Length: 138
Image (tube, rainbow, N blue to C red; front, side, top):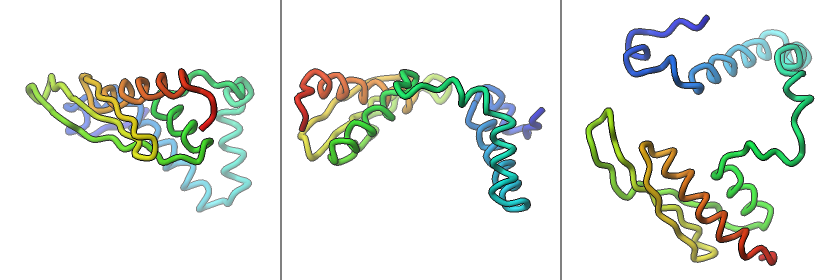
């Protein structure tokens, strides 16, 4: 069990995967610092070997931002820049408008979402669709 402070509990920390991911990263880092690479490797394999065995090269679980970045890197192109264009609504129900642009390709897309991350994912998806639709290299 992971013990959260009152502030994290109030802000919904128990629903955020990133908090657990940070804790796991800290444990692996501590094992590495204390026991070295071999100890940390054994810990990681003990925890994740089953999941690692099930990963395919064509991992379709990647999000749009990751897929876009990998596509651009593979083509040796500039990486996308995300910018918050507008934020509206009360703090518990905000609405974000985000733009994603790739200067080297003169491409841009805007998207809306209930979080900055969601809007960025949708914008990245729009650019991905455009790039994959014109997939003649580049």
